Each structure stands twice: as structure tokens, then as C-alpha cells.
Length: 118
Image: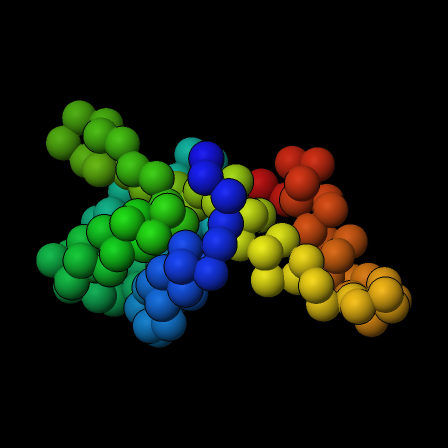
């Protein structure tokens, strides 16, 4: 996986900068690695399936989701590795020598790095 840089961070943040996409991403983070079918996501968020597919594709292009086919359904799940990488990128310089400033967030990111947050 290429290292996170400004361009990939902007792409990921841009994908999340829409209420429907953010809601879908957060739902998939909660759903866990088994993910959810696109139709289930659309129904839960009361979004037209075609519009939901458009939003899910944008999140997948930004490497925040992964997808796979299960029969006739397309399942989506959060890409936890990429999510952790984005969080680490956003917080890598936040403490500026004062780790107590970022402690709750850095503790969370460290837990995610240990694979305990998925």
C-alpha cells in the first residue's frame, strides 16, 4: 500500500465530505469486516439504490471501502487499514512535543494499529 500523502488524504477527505457518503462510511465501519450489501445500506439510509451506488463507488475510489460480489449482491466493507493510515496521517504532527494534547486520539489510533478497533 503506498504511503499516505497530501494527495491521497485530500482524495479520502473529499470523498467523506458529503453527508450521504459519510453516513455510509460510518455505517460500514460499525458493520465490521463482513460489510453490508449496497441495497441494505441504501435502505437503511433511505437513499435511492442508484445514488447509493454512486456514493459507494466514490468511497471505494478513495480507498476507504472495499467491495466484493456475493452472488447477485455487491458487498461493501470499510477498509480499516486505509482508515487507520488516514487517521495516522492526520494526527502524526498534532502533538508537537506535547503528547497529552492528543492522548485520547493517539491512544485510539494506537489501538487501531494493534487491530483492536475493527
